[in-house]
Image 1 (tube, one colour):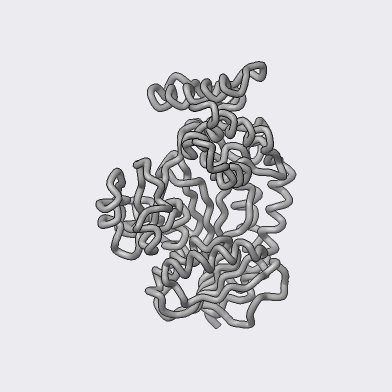
Image 2 (cartoon, one colour):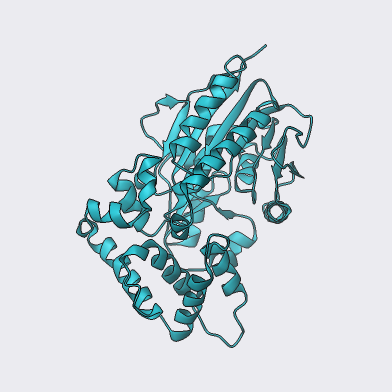
Length: 379
């Protein structure tokens, strides 16, 4: 790393905290670089994320440059010799100690958290192999249900690529793509992406629907919905409506839907490989508070599902309170209205249908996620 890169990375680490996530501080710092400052943005990001991944291995007395160098050395060591890190060492240092009280923590999961995450892209329908060939250093996912997923291993800035500018690709995690595939929307249907965020799954649903039908996309953040509109315009996706929804009983529309996706806000434990800073700011209290919010969102959104329609609950976390407990509580309250809907796991070759599915980063290289699927009973 150059001196400028070290200084920028040190500034990001210094200003990161619970109310200022490292990824947001990093984006802001890189966006505001003066023209006369020469820095490799990728090198800065790599150093910052390595620092938080290996935080407990670093000597607090070392200077920032020494800490970054040590963290990057640990990255290389893990890639070269994964077994050199023992399970007790990983359990003691890779995650906060409270984590094992809220979820099962396999050793393979810990080892996956310490490795650099894969970069997944989504091509337009049936264009995965073509996109991989165009980009180079890329590989289409070997699964017919997710053949549009592409792993990118190159070093180019994809946001400057012709493929991105023309809407031929989206940066979207493999597990996130699997959730949209599980929804299995049909062309001409009406869907609601209730917690749409910046619209990754909204755009994927639209592609799966061949841009036919209608998708309502809602979020509590106007900023995120503005980004969704920008992404939709680039992808030439126009069969949607975007509305603010705070998550309460008053829904953004009286429409009844063929399918509702509740990709609820969560602690993001399944994404700690991509966002290692969150390991040290998330608390057990967050788990419990978000579990209550998730059940509330799911219960309110369920009202909008028409008879025989689908309801999908997804979270990028793995704690029991945010996954199976939410699903269990929902089923107790809505047993007369909804039934479990078993579907084949798109990330598995076994083709065994299940109404509750887990995606683990050590299995497929995507973020960790939990998905529960129901259908409203036909009247």
